[in-house]
Image 1 (cartoon, rainbow, N blue to C red):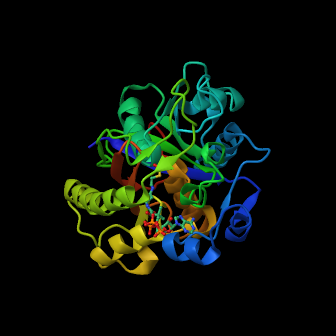
Image 2: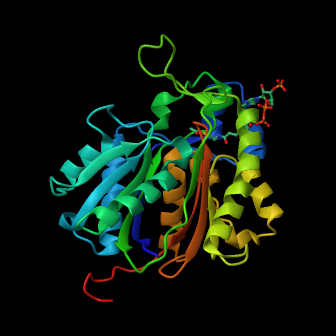
Length: 323
Ligand code: ACO
């Protein structure tokens, strides 16, 4: 025992919509190719908003939803690979703009598309040792700054956005049963850093990542279900990283999951990397599809290569003194 529940969520996306038709005018592609190969119809891109703006707006919503005050937060983790600065971190910008106490642990975490699940697990461990038992985990990306809009094999896939979760830790709550891992390999997917003499835009071997995702998803699902002592019917909902609708549908068929249990919003946002899972969780919460008491099995996979799975339980704020 001892673990976290998500007690409030929020999300924010840029105003600017980039449709498949817009992309047809930029590269040799078609709405039909993009929709049938990926399930994406449109995505949002930052043109005016900063990465930090998306983080702050989603965190403000999540705090209001959780009824938690900024001074109660003990740690903030921003899961991202596309923040405004290498330093200061996005988490430090959030700490300042939300007036979180100066002794709040504030740092960014890069595990690409698995980032939010790495972040939740890290927060669960941190809050066990932290005097304040509320934490903020944000997944946020401004990938449009790292995409080459002349490369049709990648530019149609990615979008910008953010989702934030306020979590509470209690010793008597169950763990999220996180299953995390990595297989270091820059071949399938990379974004070179400064000083490499290479353009710092996404390059990807789509088929290699596709195969990796299709193999990894069931392994993560099985490992989380086994750690939590559950069967595939038990979770109320499944939220997978939104990389490709075909990857999600293959996993759903393998476990015979009814479509209403397998959420998707890739058609409207594309692949938003570390933001995709919290963005979808927040939309589902706001729509009333999930809420306090729901158990959601989440799986992420992507650059690194990394993977992560967890059984996320939603709840309501509980006072420290009430047992
Ligand atoms: N429009 C039209 N044609 C295109 C486009 C495009 N945008 N992109 C590629 N093509 C062409 C290719 O050139 C190729 O043409 P050819 O047969 O004449 O050579 C053909 O379409 C097929 O290309 P494939 O790459 O085989 O297409 P595939 O069906 O594999 O779909 C895709 C590509 C969508 C990228 C898929 O492989 C995929 O989703 N991969 C997984 C991506 C993923 O999960 N990423 C997650 C990590 S992201 C992160 O961590 C930041």
